[in-house]
Every structure is written in structure tokens, then in C-alpha cells.
Length: 113
Length: 112
Figure 1 (tube, rainbow over the protein chains, first blue to last red):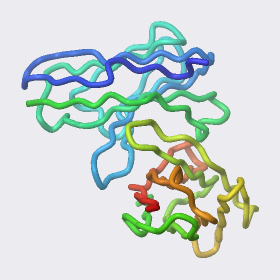
Figure 2 (figure 1 turned 90 degrees about the vertical axis):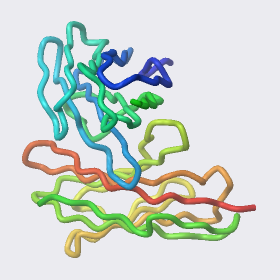
Figure 3 (figure 1 turned 180 degrees about the horizontal axis):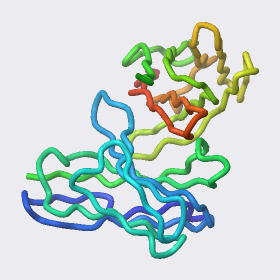
Figure 4 (figure 1 turned 45 degrees about the vertical axis):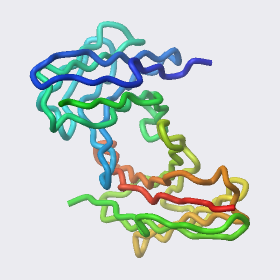
């Protein structure tokens, strides 16, 4: 039972570099989302998708792009990394009818120098 | 503004002791409230969900309460174990647009 798989687990970038965080789920969930988690703060929604071909912005979308070409995959792209994007990133998925029951990946710890 | 506040920020107790974590929210219209457990280096995992009509719900040694009038929830852990060391996050779902409002969490440390 893989659930939600995120890669990589750790990444260090230099300011201005770009990269893609990968997320895949094998539960046939329609809803997928990306969060960032910073010390002392609640999870903040970056982008979400309600199905293949449909994405929308969350609370903190600036500096990030997403796409949803398949039900399984929901990659997050950092266009030009900034130190403010140093954080732990979580991908989550759920059914559309039960979006408050989210299944999370193990997270990607990103440092931007 | 929809907000979820948790207290305390952190808590250290001895193994075998009980503890209670608090969650206050200002979310309207309220749909439900869920508690998650997040182990260090892992994603959050759902513990229990409380809907408007429920006052108390238990899941093993975890008991969640909800007072919809005062907009407060608590998570009580009985006979704590070392494996209970984690962050506990309260999440409230707003009924209007399925928005999820996340608390910052309480970091619980159980010492032997």
C-alpha cells in the first residue's frame, strides 16, 4: 500500500534554481493538494486540483506552478527558488466527497541558500 | 477571519500520565473538526473527526470533545506512551467552500 509518495525527501537549492517536487498517489483520489509547513504555523495550502486537467490556487501560490495531467500525479514546480521557500512541503490526496480526510505523503524538506 | 488556535504550543509529560490539548476556532459556517497526529519527519495522519452534533468521540486512549457553542475542542490522551510523542494538529472544515483551516499544532513530548 504505497498511498501518497513524495520525492525527493530532501533537497538543497541555490537561489534562482528551479526544481520539481514529485507527488504520486495510487488511491484513485480526485482531490490532490500541496501544502507548506513552517515552524509555528499551520499548514498553508499552495495549490490544489479536483481532477486531471483542473488546478487552482490556494493561500500561498506565488512562486509555484502545478499541473495535473493524470489522476495519479501532481508535481509542484519552483520556478526560481528563493530563501523564503525554505520549508517542508507536503502533498495530500482525498476523495472529493471527503476532502477533510486527507492522506499525506512523508514530505520534502527543502532548503534554499 | 477564520482561525484555529491551539494550546499549549508544547507540552512535556511523563510516561503514563494523562494530558489534554486544546483547540479554539472561529470558523463559520462550521462543518467539522478533525484531529491529526504528526510524527517527526512524517505527514499528518487523521486521528478522529467531530461533527456539529457530536460532543465526545473516543479512539483507544484518545478522546476528543467538541463544544460547538463555545467553539472549543479538546483532545485527551490517557495513560500516555512514548509513541504518543508527536505534534497534534486541529483542523476545522468550513461548510461553505470545503476550506480547511489548520492550527499550528501542539508538540507533545513523553518522557520515560
